[in-house]
Image (cartoon, rainbow, N blue to C red; front, top):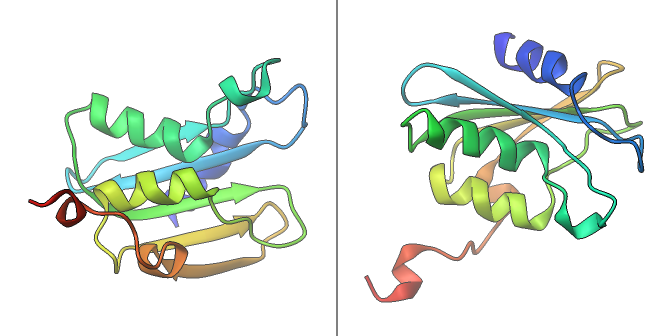
Length: 129
């Protein structure tokens, strides 16, 4: 799977000197391109950036605004889902049925949808539009 391969490769670039927990994410945009991101920690912990947020930022910087598929990988016993904030960020650019592959470096994986990750997501309709 090219998306998971891209996530695995970018994971190696993560800056995780504090947690030692490297995460890689890859997004297939509606533009057909793969956009990647890795976690970037900061000594002031809340100032770090998640891999998913980095991939979304790369996608938007490239001019794309729609996610078609996502892959996230970490060195963990079980596939690790995105944090709550990243779930909302994914929901901003992905339809509820978009598949999200969660994987481990050891080969375990599972596929969920954006809606399964974030049921009842806050959406533009909640803003009265």
